[in-house]
Length: 276
Image 1 (cartoon, rainbow, N blue to C red):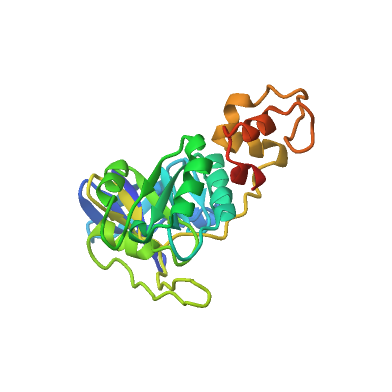
Image 2 (image 1 turned 30 degrees about the vertical axis):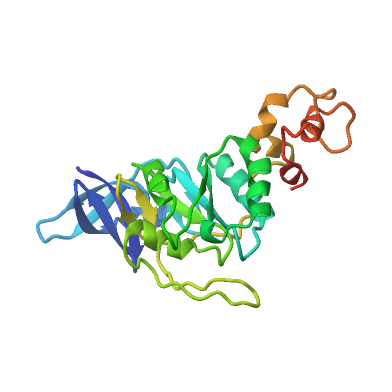
C-alpha cells in the first residue's frame, strides 16, 4: 500500500501526493467513527481501485497540528511583519512564537517591505529577536530582495505563514511561488489591514522541495495550551539563565536575585520580549 501526503481537502475529497503524482481520494468511514479528520500535511496510507477511485486507509501519527489553518506536520511557521506600515504587533509575534515552539514548529521571523524599511523597527528586531537565536530574514516581496535566501531555507520543509494583516503575506507567497497564488487586496489606509479570499488550505510544491500552504496565515493565536509556569521554556533566550535564580519557583517578575531580570538589564534579553 503506497504512502502519500495530503495536499488539500475540499468537499470530503482529498488530493494525495505520491512519487510525483496526485490522486483524488476519499477517506474510509472509520475516520468518522473514531473522530479523526484528515488534514493537509498528513502522511497517509492509501490505495487506488481499478476505477481510479482512491481511498485513504490510515492517517499516520502527526508531529503536530494547527486548528486555523487546519494543517498537520508543519516544520516551519513564517511569522511575517512589516518594516513599514502597518507597525509590527510584537505581542502577537511573541504569542505565535511561543505557541510554535510548544508545538515543535520552528518559528522564522520574516521582516517584509525592506524597500520601505524604518530604522527604528529594524533596531527593535535586532535588540529583541537577535538573542533568541531564531532565524530572521529581511525581504521585500515587491523587489524580491532576500527571497532567494528564504526559499533556500525552506528546502524540503513543510511551511505555513502567520502574522498580522497588511504585512504582505499574500504578495510574499505569490513572489515565492512565482505566480498569482491567491488574490491580494489593497490595504485600508484607516485600519491598515489586508484582505484575502483563500477558502481552503492547499500545499504547493516550490523550488527546493518545500511544501508551502497557500493560506495567508493565521494571526489569532492564544497560547492557552501552555501552563503559566512553563511559558519561560518557550523563550529561547531565557535558557542560559533558567534554574540560576535565587528561588527555584521564580517567575521572573518581583523576586529578588532573578537571573532573567539581570539578563534583561544587561541587554542579553530584549526588554520588549521580557515585558510581553
